[in-house]
Image 1 (cartoon, rainbow over the protein chains, first blue to last red):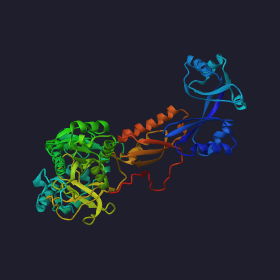
Image 2 (image 1 turned 30 degrees about the vertical axis):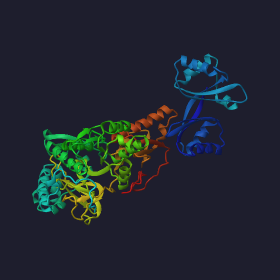
Image 3 (image 1 turned 90 degrees about the vertical axis):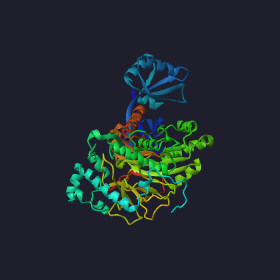
Image 4 (image 1 turned 180 degrees about the vertical axis):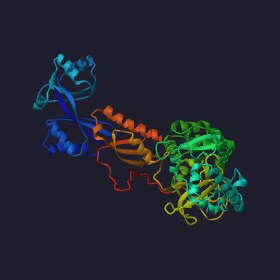
Length: 143
Length: 443
């Protein structure tokens, strides 16, 4: 139920993010979602792509620093309080969120949240108990 | 040569500063013999003398100094910590320090007599540059191992002026103190003076609320254009002096009222100027590496210290001030890769050895020196070690903090740490050029 996320080291200079996107575009790999964390000196770009193994290989071949981590994707109702319910559940079992990002699809009233938990398995268990919809890769990509 | 004094021409130790040349030279010869005798107590020089067949009692003329071995910065490291101390530990009255070429500092030791002479040497350039007993002096040098802080402190105390030992940093507090205690004299690095000036000029501060008349700068090379900028910006006189911790600190040379270069305190120091490649003396009045032999230091009798500073010793006759001592130019550069950042000596090798302690970075780095505003800044570009890259910002920040801590531990300076992708920094075949100086200082 976990999803592979590719993270890349991003230098603080023009064109670095674009170089990453170009590499994936040339290999015909679609980016499902992306998030960026940045400081004054450098950034981290986190990507979910359809074929993560090929994505990783292509990016490494192009000289990027890549690491692959498990993240958890869950759907929530795109209504006030939708996210709070999920956070209550993981907070209650003492799981910490390292970081998260969200995106929504125009075609339905659900939003998708991507989490990096310090204990993914425990978080999934807690989310399932409240009936949250945890997405596997194929479901995520079919959206 | 300037023949009009900028201020009233005064002396601290008139007879020593204006000694007739023949008398000065015979004093130098006598003191050189004593210095060599003290140095020959050190195993380092014993070995050197033996290798070259030099006999310590064979100094007959001042030219015989050329038969003495040179002393290099690296010799302090190789004889760390106190291989150059020639007196029993009980006779050491002070330790000061400066950057070494790697993680360890270079220690410099003083006897009570050394500290006493040092105070007079500092008093000489302070008085020739306008300090009077009725003045108050704000010392914005760091107090600590840096020879500038306590050295100048002792000199000012010797003159009898009042001292505000505020130390460096916190410009707002510096300016407030200038307004509240109204010191006439400021002691700091020239780059810090530029910063204070910028803050004063941009901070809506009434110039009349500040009583400054003079500033004595040291700790780093500066330029004549910086002098003009600060003098016109603040309406003060700025004075230059010269020294290095390995030979006792500030007070080795300083400007007089005529500003014809810095008078070398030749009763306590012998200067040579050499070609750093051939090690032969340059022609009189030519630029070269300055070699300093302290004549009266008891605790550390260093001989022919190769300063790596490039400058000129003038050979154009006596200065109208009446001093008989020869004069030297500003420092025009270095023959090694030492950087002087905000008054702190930094060797790229110190940064390198700090980086080598950090697992998360590769051995590929580039040091960039810039002066974005008034103060120098070092940026260290380092290639990430891919296996240490993390998707967690916290872990990445931790990597940067570890690097910062290691560099600060080695140099005492915080630098901008810029992580870059692997294989993006320039690779070198042969001699590497890992330092880029973007400051464009013209001497």
